[in-house]
Amino acid sequence: AQSVAQPEDQVNVAEGNPLTVKCTYSVSGNPYLFWYVQYPNRGLQFLLKYITGDNLVKGSYGFEAEFNKSQTSFHLKKPSALVSDSALYFCAVRPPLSGGYNKLIFGAGTRLAVHP
Amino acid sequence: SAVISQKPSRDICQRGTSLTIQCQVDSQVTMMFWYRQQPGQSLTLIATANQGSEATYESGFVIDKFPISRPNLTFSTLTVSNMSPEDSSIYLCSVEVGTGRPYEQYFGPGTRLTVT
Image 1: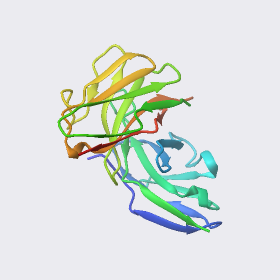
Image 2: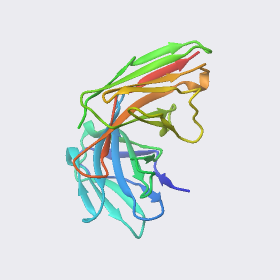
Image 3: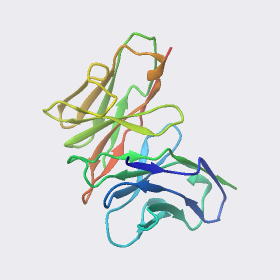
């Protein structure tokens, strides 16, 4: 079955330190990968996506993600965390054969808490 | 990107009643999506709505329970019928836009539904 795993329910980071939010996937073929962020009482916001090419993808708000095909991972990273980065982060995958539309499979989400 | 609004933002409903959620986009889009986010859980796709055709429902979701309308390229509604407490969730609509395929999805702020 196709799935996305975010192994950590919560990640705690001190402000100014680097952060990593982990994501692994199980999909046949070469998937398209996405990261979204959800702030309290708001909808999801698109951060970045991986299609092909360079394994390091840069996105909004200083975030980047590293695609690793051998480990089937797509970890979200930021060199220096801000308190305002505290939110719920979702990894999502679009399987390569989605019936012609952008069917996304979401992970369970990881809550990022950045402490001053 | 796209600006998406949803009405109502939240509601408290009694079991057995129905609620219609509206989704408005600031530009014409081909595909609109409806998701459910149950408390503390990830997003699950309910259905995909194309203008001028029947909505396509995911496994576990049926038209009688979640009828969808898509009268034009900027608007859609989702009705949650004959509600029970298990329908308490956040319902989000999204649209597919972007500069390169696969397009990313942009989400509305969500409708928080509580069924008593």
